[in-house]
Length: 307
Image (cartoon, rainbow, N blue to C red; front, side, top):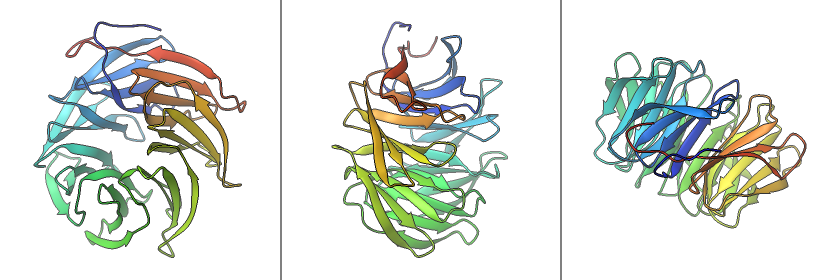
């Protein structure tokens, strides 16, 4: 455990393939890379306002961040350098992702728009419009042909990135969508929302299949374990739930955070879940033994603008 000078809320986190590092976005405007083995971190870069999300490419050479400063940024992770900024939204950028083929960066904003950018030089390629409120979350199919967006308009929209048009809209959630996950085949979609539910959709039949379960407050983040046998969810009720996807039920609840759990990620061996929270901590949980006890905890505090 360590503490630096000024505490800052954790807004997002992603874990590297080997499970040794976590890249976190902070409301203090900074992006940190934490080495979990050495219990140290370094600064990747910063925005001029709150960092809302951070995500790496599959090869972990690039990271993309979104911010309340109306921009997104692409980062060279090994060099700890900003490659370029993505400027064009007229309001806060709430989410950002990179297509699996590493061709495009995609951003969603408080301005209700989705923008697609080339990863070659950050040039804007096209804009997708249709949401009537903020675009909160994005996910892309493994073949990079389909984009799914979730909005504060309670709608999920499915887009064809080849035709650059909307295919269809999924209706069912009663409050804003916070997180989306596609299965590897792209046939199923999992969604989490402020209406406290996790819903499962069949994209072939264009219908809701079932509600996996509920938290007592909004669900902010969901992730699969690598074997796709389990789903893990984090909520504003301060808890993490682990779900059995075969049996469509909750396995157990992890309790320990004292504020909203903003991000959950699973280690590549499926043994641990790493969570980030507004209580300013990253926690690592042992789920391999079906144990709801906390495995390790890192207090994260940071002086804005430096480490």
